[in-house]
Length: 171
Image 1 (spheres, rainbow, N blue to C red):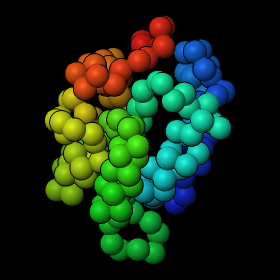
Image 2 (cartoon, rainbow, N blue to C red):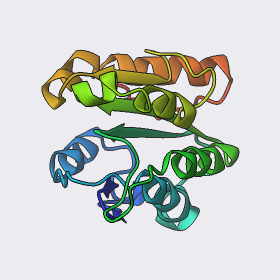
Image 3 (cartoon, rainbow, N blue to C red):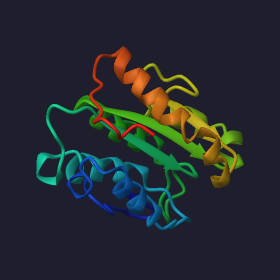
């Protein structure tokens, strides 16, 4: 899912079942929209258009959403941040059994007093830095955590006994 003023589902789970190369190819095709950060809509789309059986979700498999954002939840023409809406939308997804890991990208995310509590609020329990939420100073720095995020996701899902990743899908 990519999101700016609106969220758009780029591909659904049924497109790449069991095919890590397909997932990576699809992720490489995601454009960077920039400008606005409609995080609540991204969580809503994940709930309604990704983590559903008709889109390839498997009822006996664990679900994980990793949200990568470069800013505070916000829409054009609105001076208010959508922090509560983003956290509530993430909670609704978590209430359906989806684990959420949040990744904040840019120095702005690291410095802004709203951003870290937002990342923490959107992430699943135990809401710990470098376990269920991460920050990096820029998009190039995502390479530094590319193995940490899935490793921590798998460990956390195992700790909470919800893990069942298909063989070969872990990097």
